[in-house]
Length: 308
Length: 253
Image 1 (tube, each protein chain N blue to C red):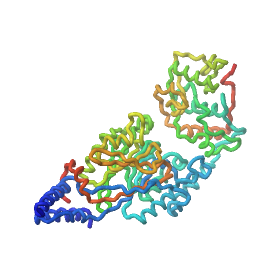
Image 2 (cartoon, each protein chain N blue to C red):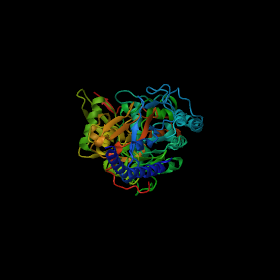
Image 3 (cartoon, each protein chain N blue to C red):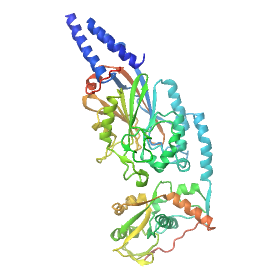
């Protein structure tokens, strides 16, 4: 039974029950729990091969061929997998200097990445360099707060994408770091940076509203936590209610497990980041239950779902 | 009583159902089921995916080949040391030369610290790999339009560690203050603005060069490593060896 059928069934069934005045608790149990596995990376920095054995740090760690087999292994065990990246795919080894990011995109496409966002280093070859490699990327780049409309990349990126997994709707949007000071002016070109908080708020409204998402994920390249006023993943979680999970990057932060930020109404936002260079693959498993708890929160949404 | 309870329940279900369909679509609750450690190391115990490995292989061969490409030959190793060093002279000079060529204007001074150079250039063949070891960072060559007082800060900084600057000579005494400063052979003029070819890292206040932070750098679009590689290739093309020496840019009294 897919999601829509299930909803239809539930609504009709409930109406019927209501009319007949039967008792109700059975209805809530009619749901089958669905499991979603989220795999993620950030700041892979062109680390195609593992760190050399004589590296001062991380010797022998990482490597995209090994990551590919780890992902494949998990895909064999889990029916619903989303594979995501939080930017800075490029820069850091001669592979990028010599092949301009071609191999990174090709391997990510083979691994069947579902989406990535853009990090500051993904601009290292300018807008032209990015445009040139896009045909090698068989996955979308999601970026909501960079406006490329006045550049050669106009129309190449989407702010968000909704993934359907076992009838669930998973909304994923991307947020990039302020470019000024990090990316040279000539590589920024005519790209405009929009406020991450306001943009994320409108993304949540869109995804929780018209897009009817069951879960909202932000791919962020803002960075984990700054002591200054600079926006980071923690501040974003606190200022934008309604994000379930922020998969971060930029600060190369190694987290063993996600931070949990409690918001208003009991909603919680998880923040995760897995270092850099593909040393780790992040894995978060979610189960989805058709629960009543969510309804209280949901009532703030406004768009009727007449098609359900 | 039983009936009443049912009706209340029915009412609440209808309300709930209405809320489900009218607002939050499914009313699904996403609950993380987390393992104690959610970061999975990608280590040697993990086999390689054959398809990915096969995709990488031809690129790997080309990288190896290109890293072994000989750019030029150095009769003697170009090394770094405290104070004026052959390697810092070599890089600071080529920075100034390249920046002048890109911006099509003479650039007065070149600045490179010993700390920014990560390895010496070996005697004999200098490969692309040598250039990567010397300059692993993706630093860009930039130009700073430096007012006299900031230039004085730079000179004071240099004199403290007896560091040489390209196109500058000076004398430093026991007080660690620079005297007899000549820039391009002319006495330093604090009322002038000097152009400095430098890495974006140092221009942004790196290595404690905080006095540069107020100046907006002019970009050249050239990576420092590319400037080094191009310079060595140019020498080879012109039939010249790769050489640099300490030539008395800093006179210690």
